[in-house]
Structure formats: structure tokens, C-alpha cells
Length: 232
Image (cartoon, rainbow, N blue to C red; front, side, top):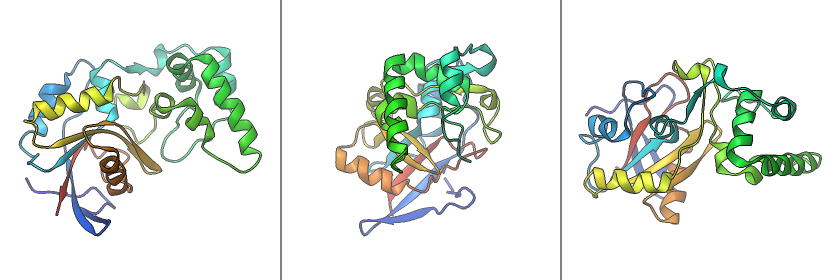
């Protein structure tokens, strides 16, 4: 395979004195109804080598689990309209800043948890602290993706929830690939990232976040939902 970096991203990065290659894997668009195993076999099996770490975006895992919902099929409650007004939107994603994504957060996380997160955030924002809403609401809220103009169709008109059982998914994919490479299900964007589940230990997960800090898979139409980290 010939590695080709996404626009504005480097193919290598140095972390803790070691250089790592980040190899994006271009694929077709994952569609509702697709299964993850054949997709991974088709695009990753011939790329991953012993000692590599395959990182898989949480979005394609969630889509293959049936966790993508057309926006026009979501009916937000009044509370979702109210809370979404107070969410800060960024150029990198709408987050919970629209009634439909907030509605899905209420369903995923529970109304009481979202209300508590909103209350904590309102207090701490007054003191200049940011990010407490998602710290309290948790990974399920953080992983919800809303539609943006830079999203590949049909997901520019869909809300995608976070994946279920990401650690189990990572373990299964490691076995599927022969067990010689580690696997991580990641939520990475241009603002930072999280490891939702992996076969790595805690130190390995922290290192992987540092390696992927600049989001080498890109944020828009790159069509690279998979990547490989390899010691250079």
C-alpha cells in the first residue's frame, strides 16, 4: 500500500522520542445495513501488520450497529429545543447544538443526567471553565455526531450516536485480524480525541491519543474512516 496523507496532515509524528507512521485507509462510504466484519476484512486486512495499531472511527462502528438516524425522523421534545440553545457550536461539528442531537442525548444518557450536566456547566461557565457539560454527561453524549455541510452524504442529514460496546468491538476486530495487531475505536476530531474502547493498556491509549492529536483522518470528505499507526 502507498500511504497518502490527508490534506494538511503529516504521515509521521514523533511522540515521547519515537516516530510513528499514521496511514489513512481510504474506503467506500459505510451505509446503513453494512456489516463491520466484511468491511474491515476488505479494507484493513491487507494493510495491518504485526505490531500495528488499527484505529477505527466510532462513526462507522455505530453505523454498522444501526445507530444512525435521519434528522427528519427525530421528533425533539420541548426540553431539547430549550437546552440546545445553550450549547456552543464549533466549526468542527454541531455537537448537541441542535434540537435533534440534544433529543438523542436525552434518550441515550437520560433526562436527569443531561439536566445535571447542563446545571453544572451553567455554574462553571460563569467562572470561565469550559467542557464540564460533556465531562458530566459522559462519552455517550460526547460521541453523538450531528449533520454538517462537510459530512459525507447521507450523513449530512443524519444523527449518529456513539457505538455500543466499543471495547468488545475492538477485541473482536483484533481476533478477526489474526491477533497480531492492536485495535482501537476512536472519537477523534480537530478539537481533540478520546479512545472509546481498545485492546491497549491505559498507557497505550494515552500514547495513541497523542499520536492522533492532529486528527490525521481529517474532518470532512476524506473518506478515510480507518487508519494504522506503525512505529517508523
